[in-house]
Length: 181
Image 1 (tube, rainbow, N blue to C red):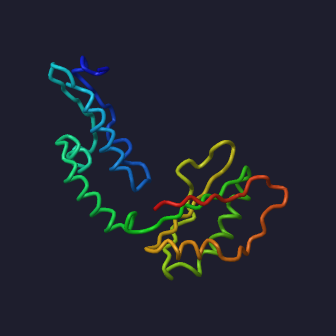
Image 2: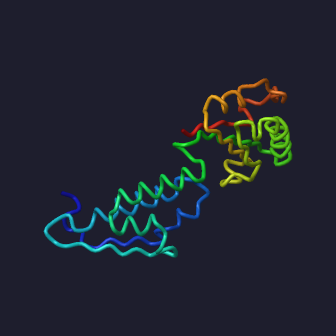
Image 3: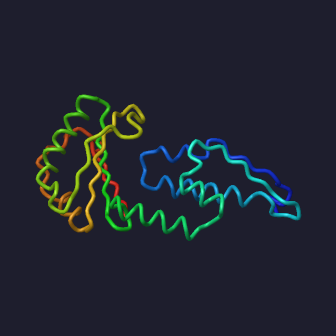
């Protein structure tokens, strides 16, 4: 057993992922803390886990400390239901990217005009907004988040006729669609 002599585990900034713009942040924090805590005290010696956090009252931290999977699951499911996140809603993350900031902004405006008739007709459209990684590999990035209780509605919204002309010389499309169930 690899971890049988590990008796102390420390997690610095255990809650840093809670501030990320991701609906799965609490789940990932809970998973990380329970996994790391499981490394301490596997052998004959007792183990301790030290957690540094700015949010000691957050349910992901509290439930991880108690190793209470059921409570975390119930709280997380309630949060996702209230905020209309998966598994209660389908999401599509549309990322607009271009090496030119001006072109990326122009594409974002055009997509915004394209998506606007679909807003509040079974699809909730958030954005455009600067992507969490605003610049990656010399490309400027903006994103839209599309939410709908039915995935088929998102498909119809996305698969409609594109009113936007794709650049002819572009080897890479300026938009990426990422589905999340």
